[in-house]
Length: 243
Image 1 (tube, rainbow, N blue to C red):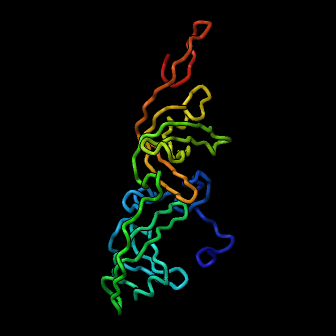
Image 2 (image 1 turned 135 degrees about the vertical axis):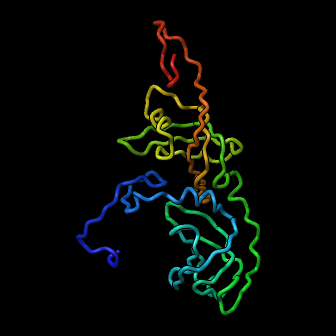
Image 3 (image 1 turned 45 degrees about the horizontal axis):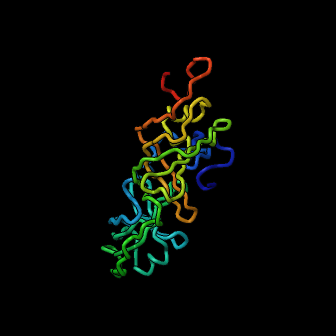
């Protein structure tokens, strides 16, 4: 960092919430977020052709994906195949990690630009992430099983049971990935969100932790539970629907 910024210098940025809901400082607040598009366009197992834009022994070979986002092939793998700067090669996406801003890649075949054109053994067909876990980018219907409101403006989330993956782990929909309407409902003590159905998109899948992160899609199906009559004859409000 000291090669780019002098100690005591002033920076222009903003505090934003990352994919985990934590707050951090960024110098890219006025730029569009490319990661949702990368998650949708480059799911695990996708094979594409790209160019080596840089290569270092400590990090490996970086290959252009979109904009300023590059994927990385490990150095040992790149050296074995004879990769050089500007070489064209066929690569496969291992996963997309927006939180770490990384796209690990597997080298499949060198096409042009290297002194020794190496052809690696074909990679096996990508296996499902883990039994009982959906793929990144999948759009599913989820049923709310637990709701935790925000505390001092942060930390709120919903846990959902995903249709088709009922035996899998509960998926988390963080408050920063909700519509404004749903976020207000989450923090409204008069609104019961349990058993509500919400359309979501899978943004992250961590097989080792069996963790699924979600993004709300613009469709909600409200099924509020029956409300017992108020003894005084007044309507008891349990959702944003009028009595």
